[in-house]
Length: 198
Image 1 (tube, one colour):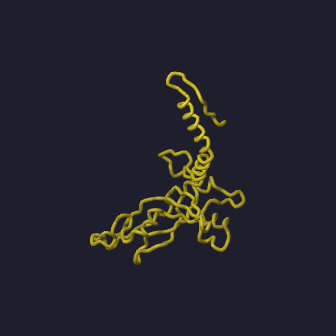
Image 2 (cartoon, rainbow, N blue to C red):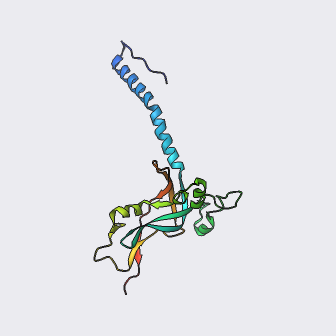
Image 3 (cartoon, rainbow, N blue to C red):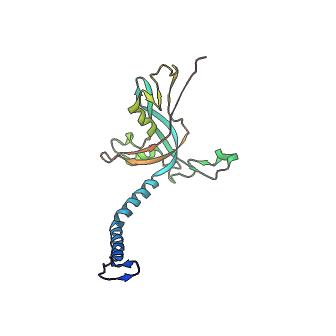
């Protein structure tokens, strides 16, 4: 957009040269910001494109409070939904069908597949998914998922639970800037469960 010039004299009712010059200044300032705004918008678009629906396939403990697990890392596989008919939902959840590698015939968007693509000495430690609610537990323990496990009212046979296998989560890719690691995050409130005393 062309820079708007300022003018010395004008009078048309309440519109004078001061009013027009203020408009020109505001317009020129916005034009200067357009590059930064475009950059910010492109970051948001890229962030959204790195999010996708996935199914949890297994988990491993990454943190404990005492001897009680409070956080896990998760393996996953990318999934998609077909047409959602409430009377036949199970047959419309696609996993391997929509994310097949033509050469292998397998879903190539999984934790293991991403680790293989990354390669290198530390690839085995990358591409896991982490629940933000559980990562918070590491800082707040013995208060886990908002419940004080050290309190006298906490049931003896109860413990925090991981997200169950086969659960669906919305994963977002994140990159650790300093180390260049690729991980995925989701946010699901956790639960406590166990056997009740009879």
